[in-house]
Length: 128
Image 1 (cartoon, one colour):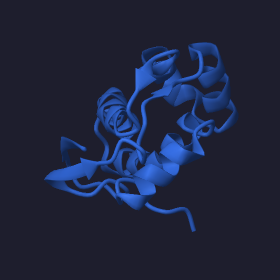
Image 2 (cartoon, one colour):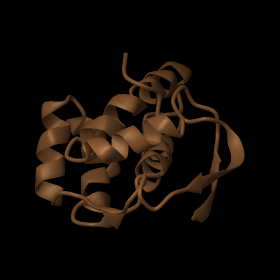
Image 3 (cartoon, rainbow, N blue to C red):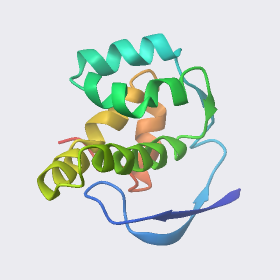
């Protein structure tokens, strides 16, 4: 059993501040992300092409070995970069954060077990 300390600010899908989650090796395993070309194509098809162009998230994740918790954390960080690029406008920031669950799901679409892991530990809101 591993312990992971996550420090995340409150956004609609990621539960707040610092907390400790016990991770069971059989529940949340590391994953190998698809290539940056595949991720870029998927992001473009899902309406995140401009976001990817400005944040380079597909290049940051493509081909990397990641723990599922690393994906929402990276999305949160790139949201900040994107919002800064867009001028830190409240409406843009809110819209970006509202799309976070969809973006995480697009990035993890090859790994339903990773999505289930994030949902079961309430890091990612369950899809309704």
